[in-house]
Length: 71
Image 1: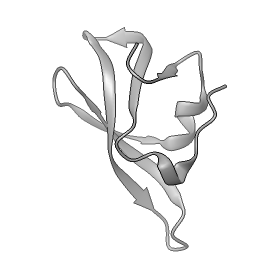
Image 2: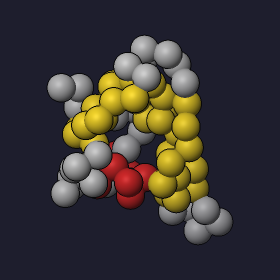
Image 3: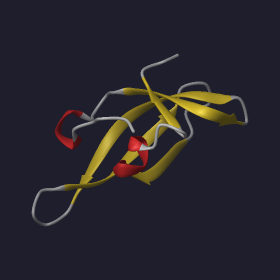
Image 4: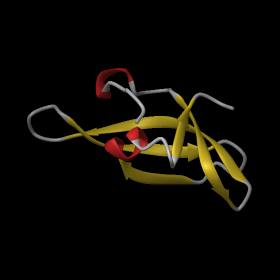
């Protein structure tokens, strides 16, 4: 399990363990907050294609899906 803090998530780099469509490296480009100013989701952008996807930030804790940094 990856140890991450939602407060330090912006502009962090991630590697998909099982890439799809040759998209392996990603960057967190935006955070989404709820009414209590708590991070709920993040916008993750594929470096190679610039495709973005909104995901629950807690998914990044799953080390079988995501590795921290660009590996």
